Amino acid sequence: MNKCAEGIYIVGRYGNPLCATWLFENNGECAIVEMPPFFKRKGRPIEIIKETIHKKGLKGPKYILSSHAHIDHTYSIFHYKKAFPGAKLIGHSSFLNDYFIKSFFYMYWTKNKRIYGQDIANKMGLFDEVFTTDLYQLILGKEPLYLIYAPKHSYEDIMIVFKGAMITGDWAIGPYPDCNDIVSSHDKIQSIDKLIYILREKNYKVHMLFSAHGDNLIYNVDFEAVMKETRDFCARINNTHHDYQW
Ligand SMILES: [Zn+2]
Image (spheres, protein in one colour):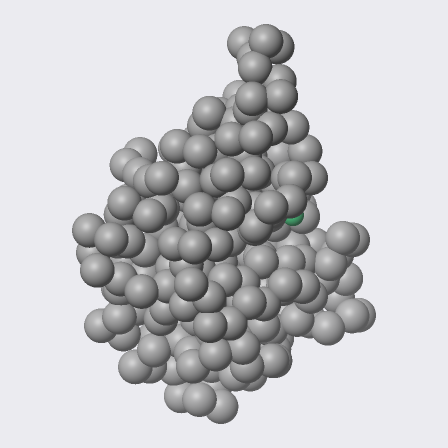
């Protein structure tokens, strides 16, 4: 368990590539972010979370969240749901697109049906709560926890904002290319503009940017300046490939 900021911890980093499981905590309530694959022998994120909850005297996790639907962030979804039945698994409607349903949930639902039986598999089904809006507000111990739908790395990207930090999923931040070519430059730019707009409207100051994988923790950020730099880079790429956009 690694403290990154007040109320924000990395439980550990798991899978290949390594992705963090995060624990958010405020006023006795907590939430889990990201469910990478893990081996029981190594690290035991669920046990670490349970021990921490016990030690700190917290209530069981209120929410289980994920920055996007890719398997290195969601593989252990059923393990977490089973370990924390009182927690609400929350996803965006984009998580239920064809790609995700066909490739991930169907496969894991089938696997769980085999392991746990149909009844439990049904209950473990999909999300407890699905939002369709760009902005979704949760509350953790009286502190707002914002989920903002903002595709850049994938069309299921959710920025998770808590206590002045933004978990930026697998976004490339700054003048760097994203690691894939899934989202069009136009949509990336729209997402960046949306983040700036929403946070301005809320008068909310993000000053930390944490990659979901937990390998890039940026403190004391001028959020709008970094976002503008990121946006400019996307716009340049857009110009280069303008003729080939569909
Ligand atoms: Zn990832």
